[in-house]
Amino acid sequence: MGITGSAIKRVRMARPLEQAVAAIVCTFQEYSGRCGDKHKLCQAELKELLQKELPTWTPTELRECDYNKFMSVLDTNKDCEVDFVEYVRSLACLCTFCHDYFKDCPPDPPCSQ
Figure 1 (tube, rainbow, N blue to C red):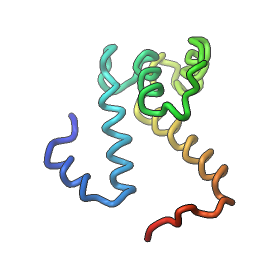
Figure 2: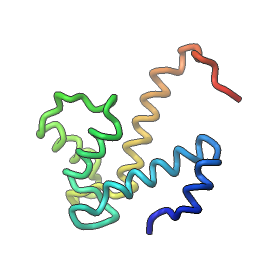
Figure 3: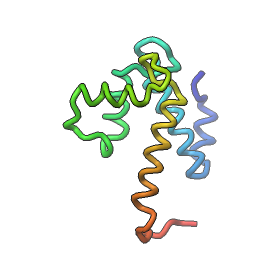
Figure 4: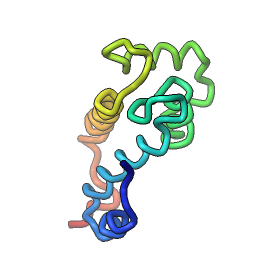
């Protein structure tokens, strides 16, 4: 079940956090299911998602063994696929890292209210 056209229109008018949630869901749905289960990412799908959607956070010099290791860390239930909960956990870790890294930096430009 994907997001409908009317839902996308509402998201465009949504607040930034609502847009972020929609982007997380839509991105997962865009990449999942090509290898089989439409509710999970296989390693190839995860690799493509990381390379295309998080290029700043995915060094180009990552080797296949690095993806294997990352996959094994994310795949907490050890079914050789990343489900939506495992995917969201990885994004939560990335958000936590960013928050910790930038929390003492002055906002530039200031966040709009």
